Length: 342
Image (cartoon, rainbow, N blue to C red; front, side, top):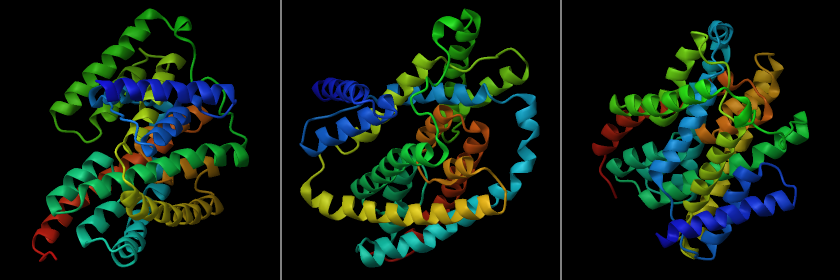
């Protein structure tokens, strides 16, 4: 239990420091920065996976609450940008696999699953089955999410003047108790049902679907309160930072540096796609950036909520990205299992 208490204390210190310094997104970036620094100086850190997943249900409810009939009616018009999602994944693969295999010296399964911008846990599970280095995958994907999540707030604020200090929702006292209770029900029931049927991203997509049904039925008119979204940010940020717990200097020199180099490639590819989408007038620039940035689904959902972007647009593209990567992973596993390993 000591690593868990240490992580909470370190994350809370990060929040306080960011508030004191008036830095953006203190509830998200504060825990990330503090836990990362603590991990690098070998402070024992631990997390509670079930609690972390539970916090993600808040994001699912927040997105589902925005799915009004008018929003759903706009979904068919998203196809011009949705079809670019698998194209971008293919380009990332063509660039990333040779980078990790030839430049960084990774074996092919590790290079493939380090490259694919899917969910961390999914890529680790598939990668382990294919014979990849699980610790390397964990560090590479944690670095990818970390760099994207830290850089995007500054980009959105500097380019589009997004207000990162505004509350992410109304206070809990202003929301009817009946709707708060309904949100709790949607979070728990949606998560459990989605997990039982084996849905990927169950902690977000299950609550999203159930909450969306109530929103379309005109039974829910509010998003989760600001306090709940702050809590979700806190646990997500702490979880990202804690993934570096126990990192060695050898891993820093090999995996962390490799991950940072890959992030540079990802950022360049993202900018190219966003510029093309914006230039063709397919979507506003900020929405395109948040939708195509290959970060974590939960983390980018938080950013979309905070900056006031079109959350449904952003989430639709990330769901498709993760779906394409996950559906392609079993095929890759079978191919790798037939390939002699070094």
